[in-house]
Length: 133
Image (tube, rainbow, N blue to C red):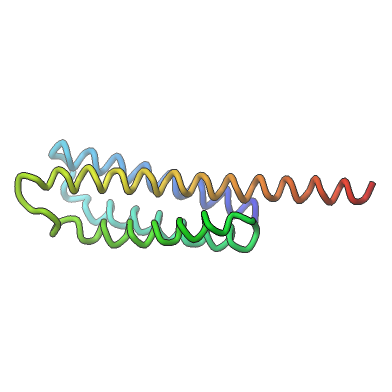
């Protein structure tokens, strides 16, 4: 599972970084034609977070982090899909900033889960080695 966590962490970082770069391009008035790609990157991040949370639930003691990440990923998905309808007009920048914040937190949660899985696996290995001595 450690390899799965690492692969998912890389996927989350790559897709999250790409979504972030596209989002910044949108803010600057470029690449509007790539909105669907931005959404797909976001969906991959959310799905990867859910899989990573499931692995963390089964392989670590960080159940609260896994549950929180699952809920946060759902909120990220819903917020991302609804953001165009929220607070239209001159105050829509608030929604854009919130969307950026929600996405960045999602990326951070993915990194925390991947680290928790890796650390737990390392501690488990060390305990097994100590038991055999």
